[in-house]
Every structure is written in structure tokens, then in C-alpha cells.
Length: 417
Image (cartoon, rainbow, N blue to C red; front, side, top):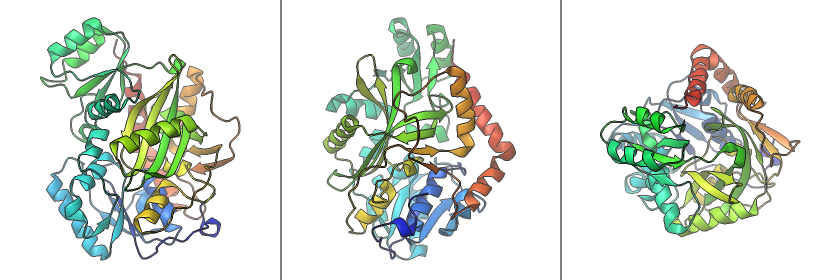
């Protein structure tokens, strides 16, 4: 395993803590554990917001304190800001914020003035993270700046859906228009493939008078490859760390969280993302999903997450820099060492990759750009220097966790006909 203190050729500012900020009830989040470990191994004091004291994050040896704060993500912003400020006062010194979801990233951007006295975070246009997290807002930005993306419509009524259904080529994909509705009353559960006009109209009857969805062109997986980009951009929208990789498996299959991925060099994709981020002026960590459409040889941007991605620990360069370390170094006034990404490195999320592997074998789908052999493997949960999060995850997975995985799989199978 890379990234241990003896392997790190730079020093972080150990006087500046980090705080993992998450809103919503998803205790089995490997990304938060990864962020606690990656900064904790540098000697950075780490804190985290957790649902309870029995989450994997709370069990990490690198966590100084878990602030137990159950939230849904749908709370009033004033209440969330007040709670963050209270935590900042308790820590008692400027602290780098590491958001793990869109709710946290947007809240921090929109309330920078209220949080600045207690926390460090990249400066960004207050409205930009919200636009990027919105499927409609992202599509509009892609059109404005000439970035390929799936054809997208945002119907405002059932009548508009009927008009769309008369002309559309099926299948199509339905997604919630705004990222945050998954915490409230989502119209659809994640990415939903709809096979026919009748299927669309049947689903749409439950979406209400003002459907909160976008309908997108379906990019067939048989003619596509799923790519991911993780990067950290400074206050001038310059990439201080940028990585490209290919997603091999996800759960639910083909439409969910990364279960297995590899670092793969892709200069064309790196240039595309660098240009787009410079054009929109974003600063901070990004996690992007793109699909390469072999029918027209273009990379089409599906998701722009303006925060740390759960699988960020896949990506590291030969100077032991990942995007979370890059942000902490930059915000504390230290240089971010340049280096080459560790091409061929593999990332596996233990609790979801086995069911994903079985599903992908049945479908006989393979990713052409995936290396035949990994140059090294980073596990999401298991770490020799920090074993308790893995054990805690395993204990919580039994029973309710298995049922949750099954529900995700069933949701992914419910294509409307």
C-alpha cells in the first residue's frame, strides 16, 4: 500500500486540521475513510461529521474526533451553517473542509463569508457548484462552452413529456434534475433507463405537475467506455493534480458507484477537462464521469461532482500526491509536488465489487482500455495500518447492508417497458 509516512517526499502543515463534511444518512462511505487516512498519515489532525459513533469513519485510528450529527441533507441552510460554525469553534483553529457530497460542497460555496473565520476552502463563484451538480445546469454549461454531453431536455409538465415521447428515440435515460432531491422525494432512483414511449408515460404519471427530471440520450454501453477524472484546481483554475482513469465495474451495474477502476493515461481527456474548468473558473476538487462514445469518437460529460469523489484514493502520482493532499497543501500555502500518475494502479471497493463482478460476467461486457494486470491495488476499506474501518463496515453490512445492495440491484433492473 502506498501513501504511508515513510514513502512521502513532502511535509504537510500539521497545525492545520481537516474536517470531513457530509450531510445525509450514508454511513458506509469509503471516500470519507480514505480522506481521513490520506491526511492522517501525514500527521494532520482529522475530524469528521458522522451519523453515529459506530461508522467506519469513526473507527479510524487516524480520526481525532467524530462529531455525531445525524442529518438528511434537506435541512435549512442556516441550521447547517450554524452547526458547522459550532464545530469550527470547538476545533479552535483554521481547518480545511473536505466535502464528500454535493449538499456540503454547495453549502460551503454559498456561505463562504459565514464560514471563512473558522475554515479553509477553495474560493469559488458561490453559484457555480450548484449549477455543476444540477443535471440541467451542467448541460447548459456544456452547451455554452462547447463540451460534448448527451442530448438533454428538461420537461416542465406532463404535456411536455408527451410531446417529447412522440419524437424521441428510445431507450432514453431519466435522471433527477437537481442533485439534492435524492435526500427528499426523488422522481427516479438514480439513472433510470426507459425502453419505450409507454414506459416513459407510465413513469411520468407519478412525477407530479412539475417533473423534477431531465431526459437524456441513451449512450449504449456496447458502443461506449466509462472514464473518470479526478483533479484539484487552485484559485486560478489551474490543475495542481489531475488524473484520468477508466471505470471497469460499478454497482448497480453500468449506472452506479465505482466498484473497480484503473488509472489509464489519457492526455486528450485531461486537456478537455482542463480547458472546461478554466473556462468556467472552478476552484477545488472535482470528480467527473465521462462516456467515450465510439460512434462519434467523443468524450461526453455525464456528471461533474464539485467535491471529492468516493474513489479518489485510486489516483495518486509518484510523489504520493492525491487530490485531497493537493488541496490541503495548497490551502496551507505549500507547494504541490508534480509527478506522473501511477498508471495501471487498480482500485477495488470490497463490499460492492463482488456482486458487480458477477453481474458484469453475465453481461459479458469488458472495458477495452482496462490493463490486463494491475501495477498495484488500493482497497477502499482494508488497510493494514487502520483495520477497524473494514471490520466496522463488515459488521454493518450484514443484514441491512445486504438488503440495501439488493435494493440497488433491483432498482437498476427496473427498466420501464
